[in-house]
Length: 443
Image 1 (cartoon, rainbow, N blue to C red):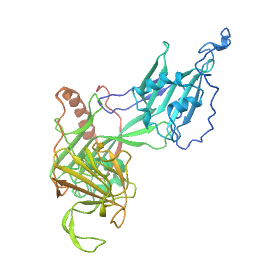
Image 2: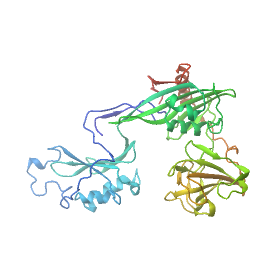
Image 3: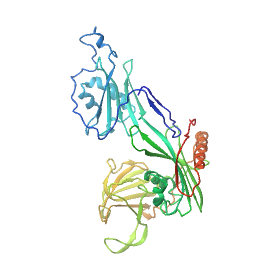
Image 4: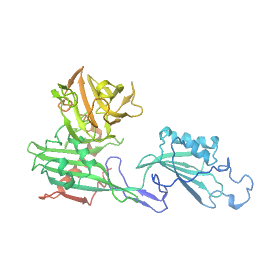
C-alpha cells in the first residue's frame, strides 16, 4: 500500500498510526453487494501491446492503474478468481507460487475481500491484495524484473490505550458494565488471572482492579474492538497480583509478573470464555434428568448454544464423535498423564478428528445440548491416568520465565506498563480514561 506509513513494534503493542495519501480500497465488507464478475478475454492480461507496439497508449504505466474489488465466494480459489479475469494458468502460476511462500492459499475464506490492480494500458496484473483476517493483508506485487513479491501488511487501523480503575462492589461479572469493561476484556482477565485469582467468585467488595488494554479502531468503524490486555493488577486481601503482556521478536506473547516470572500456565483454567459455572465437580450430585444421586466427575459451564469451546492445553485428539450421555464429545490426550473431555457439543470443529494435533486455546467445537442435557452447556472433565480430578482445583505447571536474551526488552515494557497502571487515578467510583502515551521507543 504505497503512501501508507505505519508505526508499530514487534516487541510491544503500541499506538499505531497509519496515514494514507492515496485512496485505499475497502476490503472485506461482508454486507457489500456482489457484482457479476465477467471474465475478460483469455490472455488479455500480460500480453501488453502485442498488436500495436508503437502506440503510446500501450506503454506500461502510461495510463495509470485500475483496481477491482470483489468478495471471495465459497469454493473460490485465487487461481479461479484470476482465471475469471482472463489470466491463464501460465501467467497465474508465478503469483500463486509467490503467495504460497507466505500464506496457505487453501485457507482463503468466503466473504473476504480481494483487490486486483491492473495496468490500464497493458491490462497486466500489477497487485493482488487479499484480506487474511480483520487485521492483515496478503499483498502480491509485480516487480520490474518480472518476479512477484509477497508479504503481509497491516490493515488500515489505529490503536488507542484505555485504562480502567475501580473497586469491586459485587463481583467482576456484575461490576464490569459500571467499569466500562468490554466482555472480551473480562474474559481475558479470567484467562490471565484464572489460576491466581478466581475472578468468578474470588473477588470481594473493596478489592481493586486496574487494567490497561487496547481499543482497535478500524477505518470507517463506528466503535472500537478490544485488543490485547497490556497490563492488569488486582489488589485484594490476599495481596497484589500483576500481569504484564510481553511479546518477543518472533511474535510470541504471554503474561509475566514484575521480574519476569510467568503468570501463564500450560493449561487454560476455563475451556470457554468467562461464563457461569452451573455444576461443580462432586462425588455425589442429583442428576437433573435422571433424578438419581451419582458422582459428577466434571464441571458444567452454562453458555449460549454455539459458544466456541477451546482446548485447555495442547495435545492430540483421542476421540471425536458421539459418546453416550455426553452426546457429541471431544477427548484430548495431553503430555503426561492428563486427558481432557468436552461434552454436549453442538458440533465438532473441522479438522478435529482422531489423531489430530491441537494447540492450547484452539477452537475444537461449540456449546450445545446433545446427549443427556437439560439445555445448552459444556461438560468439561479432566482425568489423570484414568482417574477423574477436579479440573478447577488441579494446579497446572507455570510456563517458562522471560528468556534471558529478551530480559532487557521486557524490563523496558515492564516499566512502561507499571507506570501506566500507577497513573490511573484512585477514585470512589470506576473510572475509564484514554491514555495519552503509548509505548513509543520500546523497539
